[in-house]
Image 1 (spheres, rainbow, N blue to C red):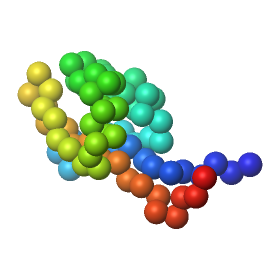
Image 2 (cartoon, helix red, strand yellow):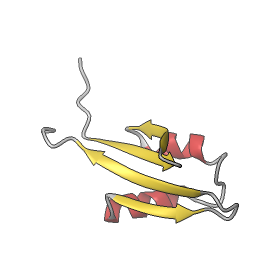
Image 3 (cartoon, helix red, strand yellow):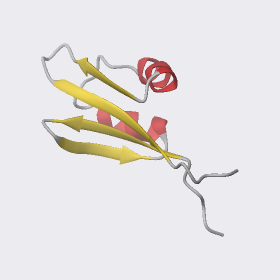
Image 4 (cartoon, rainbow, N blue to C red):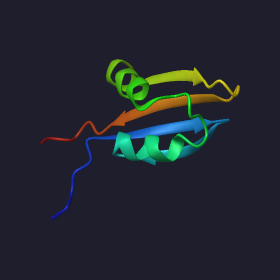
Length: 75
């Protein structure tokens, strides 16, 4: 059975996508090595409220976080 994708989470640094995944927990598990101070809860709440946002980690790296919705998705 084919799985339909409703949204994709993307983390961007310097104009390049570092991570893209349909599962926010998976993307955070990979991303935490770049910015351990950006928590899963912060990402979850921010993605819930915004489609695109920017955060700077304590180590000075700037990241853009974006969620891309599949407009044709119907559960």
